[in-house]
Image 1 (cartoon, one colour):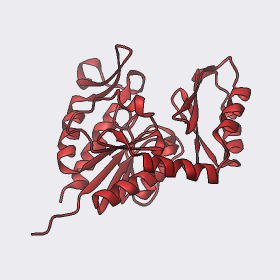
Image 2: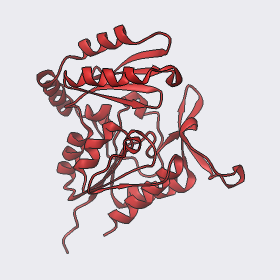
Image 3: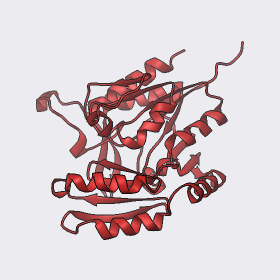
Image 4: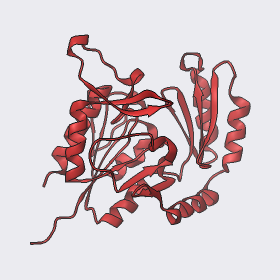
Length: 272
């Protein structure tokens, strides 16, 4: 009997499957709050969570489909996360800049990405210099370069002028870059640096015939559009803009319960 091609499940992590304490959105009475599992520790402190129910669903999904964590995090930041279930054979970091195979960077993939960036958009140095010069120390807390691929700022969100981000987005777009505001972070990412390209490569290698995806931010839009089916939670950049597409389901749940709902949808859609 022929073996069915695997289903590939590519999911963003932060504010999609895992949540910081500030992003949990626990609006119910304390006595009815779900039990939480810590899945990330940083500098000896708990940092990210999912519900215990979501942890069980993710373990089940890992046995049923090719689960691919797909994140804008650097490799070092990703490796702090301890997800339940089987260790993923593939993971996508740095918004598609690094493809990990059994935890190890595929250097040929990374070389191809960097060559494409050099050909298709303004250099990182120009973008980083502009961020440094235009950001106001009143609200800027950190300016970081991630994997020599893109830049991000950590800001005091309540002090950040709304027009500054919009003006930055216009300036960056003219140079082939995308701007995304996620919580306290403002990302400037080269437009050719996409999660979807790396997911297509994993699909090619695994022979997957059906791809499912989830994400909450502008940087996840290309991933969702490339999937056969996708889901976005009721929070985040995409929800704020009312973004949707024919194969995308906009879920009402917000916060950590959205992560649980997304995993239920993944399981349902990946069953033969």
